[in-house]
Length: 129
Image (cartoon, rainbow, N blue to C red; front, side, top):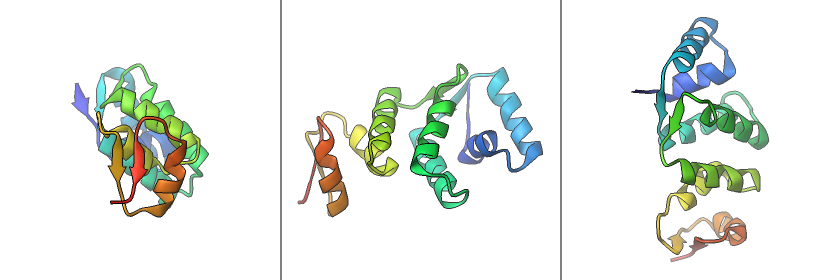
């Protein structure tokens, strides 16, 4: 199995460079690949910041890549949870941080928006220090 970088995932999804997009597609279709959570996090940022994807479009793109039969995603359960929370209105980075908090019951932050929006999440509470 080979791990892929953000640029491979973005080329696969966006197809803005046809040669690289075809190489990414061929790789992902022919062999098993590993996608780290950090690659998904960066992919969401690139799609939103560079390609003006909406949150809903980002979520669908991330779900599409994670759902491919040849793709293994790091910490799949946390990523699935983060994608659900992202689709319910949390920022993806915040959702992934909360979903990756292990057995913690609180996620300490100075981010007031996260504390407010995190109140909808069951399991890990975002709180001020």
